Amino acid sequence: MKKKHLIELRNSLRRRGFWVDVIDRELVLDQWYSKSNFCEMLELLTSLQISIQIGEQGIRLEPNTLVPDEIFNRIESFNRDDLRLIPISLTIPQGWSYNPNNDLSMLEIDCGIVSLVFALNKVDLYTSMSCDGHGQREPKIWFNGHAYIETIRKILMEANREVSFAYDWEIREEGSSSVLTAKKRLSNDKWDVKKIQDDALALSEYIYNNYFRIW
Image 1 (cartoon, helix red, strand yellow):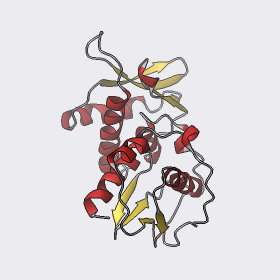
Image 2 (image 1 turned 90 degrees about the horizontal axis):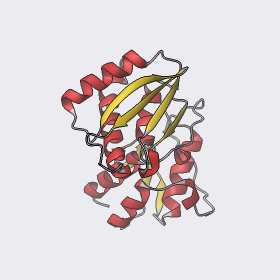
Image 3 (image 1 turned 180 degrees about the vertical axis):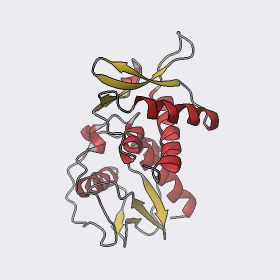
């Protein structure tokens, strides 16, 4: 597979909450993830009949494997109900370090918001619940208490200087919790999960690139 196609596959997996990098032609999952997250990623790819091998640190595609655009779209909108029970004999890569304490399931988090849930938890801004709105309402990510409000407001303010978003993102108190959410710029606009996913990925990349070494 050409590197260009690996990058496209990387981007689709990131949108679905699996933060991978291309290293030595392998897709290597971030060390924040657990063994079960790695298995979720394998289950996703094999459910879509993408032929893979285990590499030194991540996964490799079988030689001459082609992934059509339709499959990229299916990865980005994939949920647990789409899983096909295909026996997997693949193991965890020997050179991959993982997080044994992470108990989040990526496939149980809404596809529109999952990349942002990853990035927030990656930098120790621990989420309690999330919903992408399913095209009917605003996306929301909840946090217990109010301790993260000022930090996340600072992140949003800085990100808005560098990133163009489809929606206006804000964090506010909601009872004993805090909620990160978005607002439409025009009241008659429709909620678009794809645009929410675009925003979530863009904000995730900003957080990942600017904050993960600081916390």
